[in-house]
Amino acid sequence: MKKAVLATEDGNVFEGRAVGAEGESTGELVFNTSMTGYQEILTDPSYAGQIVTMTYTQIGNYGCNEEDVESRKPFVAGFVMRECCLEPSNFRATMSLPEYLRKHNVVAIDGVDTRRITTHLRTKGAMKSIISTIDFDHDSLIRKAKASPDMAGSDWVKHVSVREAYDYAPPSEKKYKVVAMDYGIKLNILRLLREAGCDVSVLPATAGPEEVLKYHPDGVFLSNGPGDPAALPYIYPVVQALIEKRIPIFGICLGHQILGHALGGTTYKLKFGHRGGNQPVMQNAPGRVEITAQNHGFAVDSDSLDHSKIRVSHTHLNDKTVSGMEHKELPIFSVQYHPEASPGPHDSRYLFAKFTQMMDENKAKQPR
Image (cartoon, rainbow, N blue to C red):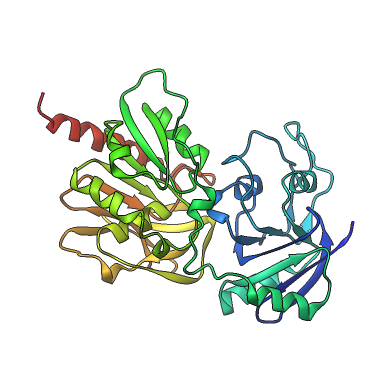
């Protein structure tokens, strides 16, 4: 295996082993605390523009296949591990993690102190970084990291969204017509909507309200996605037009943040974000705690919301940030986490049932 170097904008350099594609890649360095699910993480479009450090010490033990993916390809800018398994043991594996990384041109490094990296990011915050297998000059790499784009102010949605609308595989019994706005949608969201009886049409992020309405949807889903929600002014008017039509709306992650903007609120960048499968969230009304999967670096500012109309429904227990909200009068709700990810428990699956119930109630109000 060849040498690889990871460098951060503030001058930290980590030398290790190249376990992915050759070349170099820049991105915002973040960490994920999940013990498993590395292939789902690699293929989550919400990680576009980011270099992901896994805090668990051994990654790749069960290999990779072409089934356990969340999108059409990996979108991470780079991958960092303490130890990458070169010889996986799993009857479903069709290739090793290094083979998968090379196949999809993902630059990766292992043999580095991921505990030190994580501690540094928790102290200093997520930062611009670079992984290289071709340039080993420390000063050169630090300059490249500093010169790379900031995540704040960056629109990555257009990079990951589909270009053309398509229909997802319909359920055997079509109970609801749903339009899903693709800001970087994960496949398991579409699977769970299908299981709930939703006939789903997926539209690109640039679709206007008239394109959405021509499907006569019973509900609209706003998906997860990457980048800064404040950098998407072309999307807010679309969501506002759907709100005015009183169409039931369910938002997840970036969709939650976009909904916050559309409802007159603002978002801000977190120091190092929430990424992992063990994030504790309080469902405020019944006082129930959910263990959730999360992947976001921005949050909705509670003080910017009109609390006469919007209720904060969920709160992250680690830092008290907004993890969910719902409109008091309109059929609209959203969460900051990923109920489709199921990191062991299925604590949050009820949200899909809540969406279908909302569509049922809204249809019952329509004149016959």
